[in-house]
Length: 219
Image: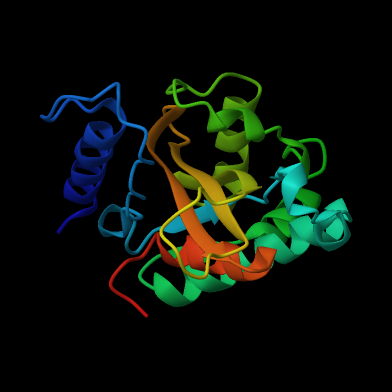
C-alpha cells in the first residue's frame, strides 16, 4: 500500500470514528462508556509519529491517592514511560518519537521549537474539538518539521475514577481513563480520538491496562 493510500485510509477511517458519519445512529440515552477505539496503526505504519508528554493527571478524591500521585513531575514521567514503552512494544510498525526524544529535539532548536511539556494539550480532551487552534497548531507543525513526520499522538489527560458498582464479587479499586487524540500536523486537525480504559488496584496497573486496550488482540 502506498503512503498516499495509507493516508487516505487513515483519514477516512478516523473521520468516521470522530464524526459518526459512516452509518449508525447515536443513542443520546446511552450511559455505557463508548468502547475504546483501537489505535489506527494501519495508516501510521512505517511513519515517524510523535508521542507528546502527558500534562494532566487527576484522581477522584474518594480514591485517596494523594500519596501515590501527589508528586506531579514524578507521576507525569512515570506515566509517559508506561505509555511510550507499551506503544513501542505493541505497535512496532510505527516509528515512535517519544517524549524524551521530543524534548531533546526541542532543546536543540531554542527559539524555534516549543517545549513539549508546555504546549497546553489537555484542552484537546474536549470531544467537540476537530480543528487545532493556534498557538498549538503552529507549535506542532514546527516540531514535526524537526522530527520529520506528520502525525502526532497526544495523551491529552489521565483521570482515575472509582468504578461504578457492579455485580457481587471483587472490584478493582479504580478505572484509568486516558484521553488520546491523533493530530495531522500539516492540516491542524484531529482525525481520531478515544478514551482508553483500564482497571487496577493502583495507578500504574490501571494505566497499563488502559494503554493495552489501544492495541486489542495482544496479551
